[in-house]
Image (cartoon, rainbow, N blue to C red; front, side, top):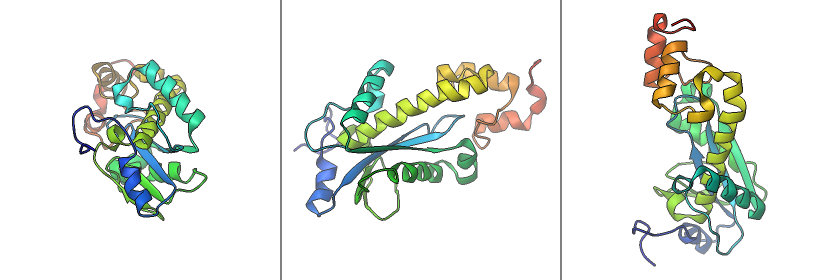
Length: 217
């Protein structure tokens, strides 16, 4: 078996197998979306797949329509899956790493059967389970890849269907809260809304100079 970092190396059960060989079952894959956005939640997902081969890949390698179709397949075949959110206010209060762990724990606690082990994307999710947290787990673990699909599509859906109608001036349906030019321009014009992460530098700079923002500017 090639080492996990080999180019072209696709997702498989290598990390889960380490836990299986130690008598740890069931094992869930965990991944998140939205850590680097300026607005909106961090969303984490946890997935337990049945043994066997699955076509799931890291969500970042797929188009939006491919992600949606693959996420639907994950929900159809998974033994268990869950999705957890950490809000912008929690991100400001706790910082991104701790808020991401909180979202992941919320996702994992939805799983039935409860997992005895986790494979996460470099995320130390402490709890009553064993954890393997290699970097880029979503590129190498089938279950973490499946979780990445659910986390990304669920966050995108929330930004389209909840955030955008609530605060239409920011264009959340298009950029999902990330720091693209159109979002930065809207932030400069209108100032931050309740979904913005006040500790993130572009948002904090606007908050320091409120005279630059406002509906008439």
